[in-house]
Image (cartoon, rainbow, N blue to C red; front, side, top):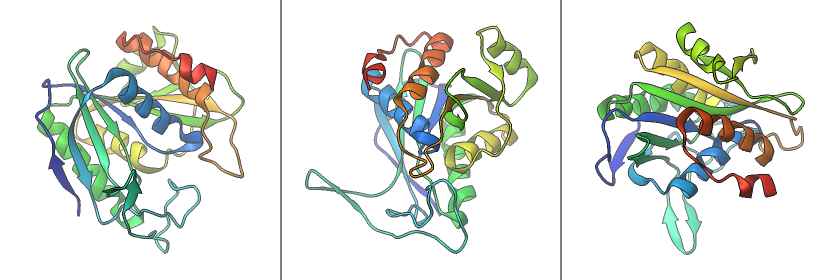
Length: 230
């Protein structure tokens, strides 16, 4: 079960969805947070689910386990109460729907991803760009896509396929299930050195590399100096 709270009307129809969530070295999470902070999009919807734990029993959070559903609860920040959620932000130029993801537990992953895609189709999303990371020595950004035409398009921008292997959690499922709904998608993977003590320990350098490629694709002119400084 998952439900949506609408906080406003989307600014544009048929936006490109930008998707990121906690993952390896938190690249997707940091990237979408940086986009929200820098582009100031409008919050238009929030998705809630009883399958969103406030405290994960798995480590890292994106590797779910059927026997470890996590702990339910709320979050307190600045004296205010909030529930775990997926957030959707709308931007007019370029037309984007920035999606800040949240990992569901094992039983809720497909339900949550499909509810996200329901909302994408409601808002007219026909294309998505997923931001994530993969393990290795620091270096180039690589990609994956739902079809060969998109791979060729990315190659023209100096982004080639490279990573092969599992893509866990929220962003991976939205990416894969989106293909079944005819939503064309690409994923930009930032190469990062895994931190085995804390797999989600932030890597702002790899995040900056991913956002530089996104800048190239969408002409966003995002200021990355803060990430480079970190």
